[in-house]
Length: 118
Image (cartoon, rainbow, N blue to C red; front, top):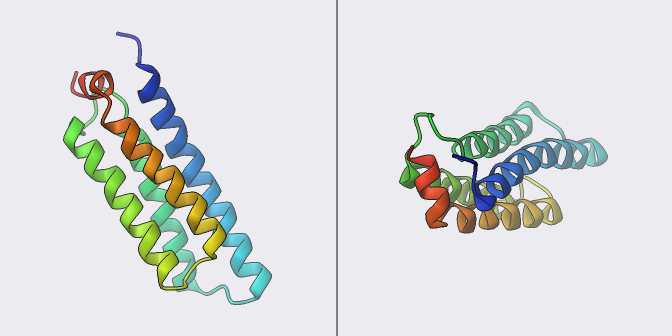
């Protein structure tokens, strides 16, 4: 079965979010000279969560359709929490939150849920 359009978009958004998070938050820390090991841990956490959510949009993995949706919600929650606490730049956090919201929307598509559950 060919991947539905929403599954392809969701996976692409996950990869985009992971790469953009790493670049965005890393540049934010280096511009402000406040980069610490803990800040980098937050960056890596968000990046890994985006990449995991991207992988959840594929069939034949350990993810179920509900698990993929939950992972998208968890990614959104972590992005919002880190941005709200001031550990990351607001502009980058806002963009990442929008990407995570779009991933949540894509995970609710019926064809995508059938595709993931194969």
